[in-house]
Amino acid sequence: MGHEWDEWNGRPLPGGGDFSAPPALFFRFAALTLAALAGGVALLFYLLAPRLGALWPGLFPRALWIALGVGAGLEGIYLGLVAASYYGGTNLLPERLMERGPYLRLMNYTSLVARAFGRRDWVEHVAIDIYNTLAVRRGRKVGTGELLVLIPRCLSKQALDGVLEIAGRYEVPVFVATRGQLARRVIRERRPRAVVAVACERDMMTGLRDVAGKLPVLGLTMQLPNGPCRDAALDLAQMEQWVRGWISTSSLPASR
Image 1 (cartoon, helix red, strand yellow):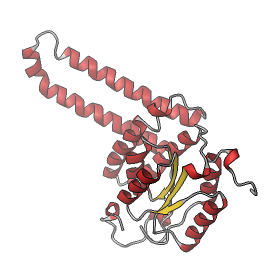
Image 2: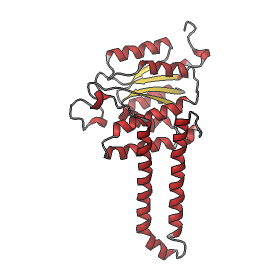
Image 3: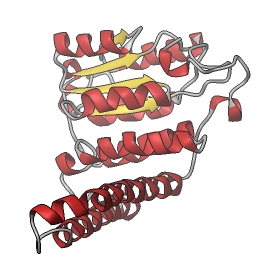
Image 4: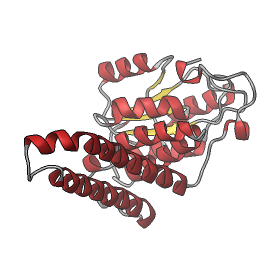
């Protein structure tokens, strides 16, 4: 079991290990996160203003508060663009300014805030769902040999058999990653052009943070009916849809 679940007490997880949640949950916590960030910076400015005002009379603290206001406004606009992109069905920003850029950092900061309210797994789940929705809309295509499927060792036999069947059907390589460091090494060695990864919400957040900015990734979260890292289940139909959607028509096996 990974260190992300060190605090698990062995009891059944809420909802049978299914942390599905409405998208609005993430946007509420993201707004709270940005507000907390702005508040923290405002407090710092408040503490530093007298000293800086003595050094540069007439410039501080007014310049500091103007800069804070502009920064907070830009953060609010950005979150609004992400929400409008998700709900509106059209990505309003390029991927480097959204799901493969600042959104990854927003996901992680929001996760930290959600932990304080005991909502970490639900917020992470929907944050990943939003990320996937934005990423799928890019319509990226790769060849069968350019796509890599990464799965954990904790899948149930039924889930593992299903993944292997899908991978065989579309002639896509599969690798069982026993830990994040090994998964990153496989990506470096194989140099795929895209990855479909399977993990729990906590491990997926770490993986997206480390990899998605460098390589297109779709992250399929699991259900954990028997607790973390044991007999996990997943949505095989969703996996097949992603694999088929990413493989260019010319690369699909002729018999399919």
